[in-house]
View 1 (cartoon, rainbow, N blue to C red):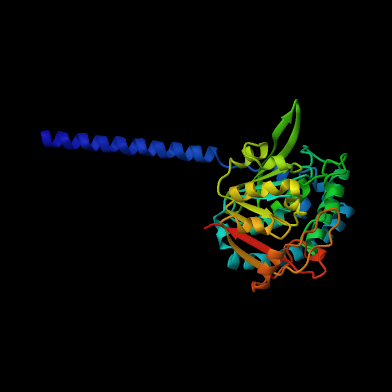
View 2: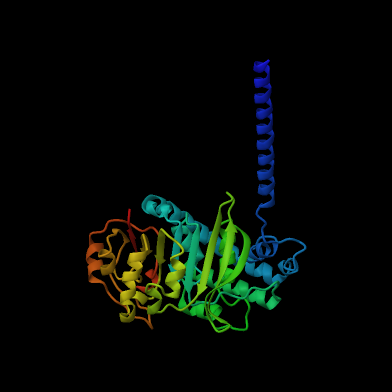
Length: 373
């Protein structure tokens, strides 16, 4: 009798255990359903609009897609896209063979980025967080945009893509004209281009948020936008665009910028066509900060002076050729003899233009890759 009683008790306990676990799994399933990612219809329609993909028929943008001006401008965009896709293919293949350590970088920072999300995502393809910092404006977040705003947004993108497809870098005068000077234009800023490239890389937008790193009284003096995006493999990533003119005081411990960047570990740095900012006397100490805070650095000779990289306990790879300085105006044009000597012994090719190639008599590109294992 005791034996049967024992088995009955065991059976009841097993039944209750299974029932309880079934309840838990159903509850977890309900939570999963409730936490299902919701995409922003408005932002995804706008990115499709700027890319030339069809928007929802109930969107206010739909009527503009039927306009002659839009059809004409999108044909130009699609022509440029073919060149971007070919450049993308070349860079991705080369990157896979030569910059494998970057796949471990989860937080990437692009100083003086402008709107160049294109190269940023190509050179740090596995990052979860992309942080772009440049003096160009963010663009205004609105529920809808006027036809004039949308025309300006398309024109903004066309000019930036024209820069990228002809030289591989963004011209200061172009960025100034379309992302800084036109204060009355809501889409004067990096917003249209970033939306374009989000679509280019097959991401959808969960939402876009305003952020602010610094306030002065009630005014945000370092504004930004946070783009929360998701790809076809359901990976969520973040793009932070911070509108800020870099100053030497940004690159010291406990500065506003340092406090923001310290939220992210295992960081990779990207510098391309960086106007030799860190070669100016007032920024020389900033190089020590950058070397101490980044595990990898991808740049051309316009980034951190080569002598600092060599002192930074990095493994260094050189690609391309370095023979002459640039013809750029309104900035210094240092020629780095130590870099020239090391490049003379370099045999690694670079199958694409990178940085200021077209601003040199030689028309040659160089890429410097510094990393820690």
